[in-house]
Image 1 (cartoon, rainbow, N blue to C red):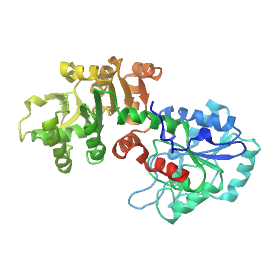
Image 2 (cartoon, rainbow, N blue to C red):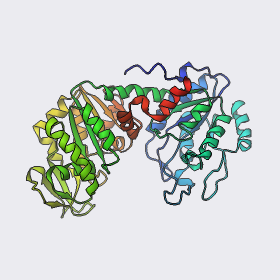
Image 3 (cartoon, rainbow, N blue to C red):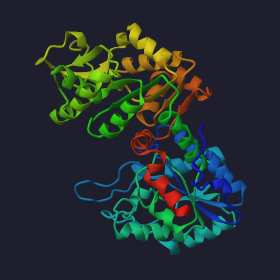
Image 4 (tube, rainbow, N blue to C red):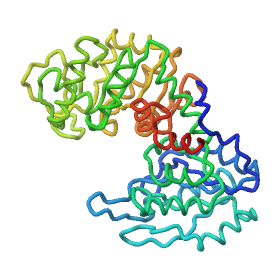
Length: 430
């Protein structure tokens, strides 16, 4: 790992005895009221233990899911996006009870404010160590969390009013909201242990040992274009998957592929032009095509890119065919890389897992490379499609699992210390 920016304030340098510590974590692992993977929760145990062992009183907060209706702006609260499953998990793992305050919510506006009077009894119990900690309701239930207006400023003030110290340990929550950024200016603020670890490992992607192989996929090209072009500059070899790869193929070969927007094809033309001279993109040459988004084996077929002709029309390309990885050039590139960054499943893994599973297996055969996996779908794909490799990787120092794939891509585009919540910590320390 690399050393951290000396201007970044670190939690281990703060005296916590007798202080209420408000920590923003990224425990966004609940889906319809059930924890889908506890990895991100477990990754913050170091901070929780540290606060308690140093005599501090912990208050945790996280977002869970998407609660705001984009059309109406209404905020929906309820069991599907509650932090209750997280608190139950912490109770089982840490034997220390976190209590969620019962704050009234408006059916359209969510929780309008953090009722400080309602919190007073809980804060007293916390300071007398009658409870292990407080866990605030889903931060996206608060009307000011994402609104970027006077309600955001008021919410940040309320967060600050209940604590002496703020800690950001939520690397995956890279967007500047009240709980990740605005509150930083109101209290002495520090980077938590997980945040430090993630930033240190980012340097292995930003300044990789070469050859550097990067793998990027996504469901929409325009959302990835900035980081994708930055990755292209840094990488020696680039593999694409998902709709991003489909858009690239449509732009390069002049074919029409169902599910690919014409706008994405136009955007991908820039990458095609770049690669004509540099030749960094290594193409998996066989694709799984289907006339519909479904696994109807009778209508699914393998299509090879060498057979493309301009003007041809295809159905949905839903996966990279596993036989693509029988190509000696492709396996040599994966096997010879010194750094591998994976932010992808190769296709629609819920229906067509074979391409992603074969790719992960090939990555696992490279014992010498540093293998860095982005969060979210990438980690879930590795765990579900190659569980043996996932369990092996947990105890293998050559692997590192980031807790936020979007955060890594943002850091690649803006620099590790250009992520706004991280920049807020440094600015506040000044």
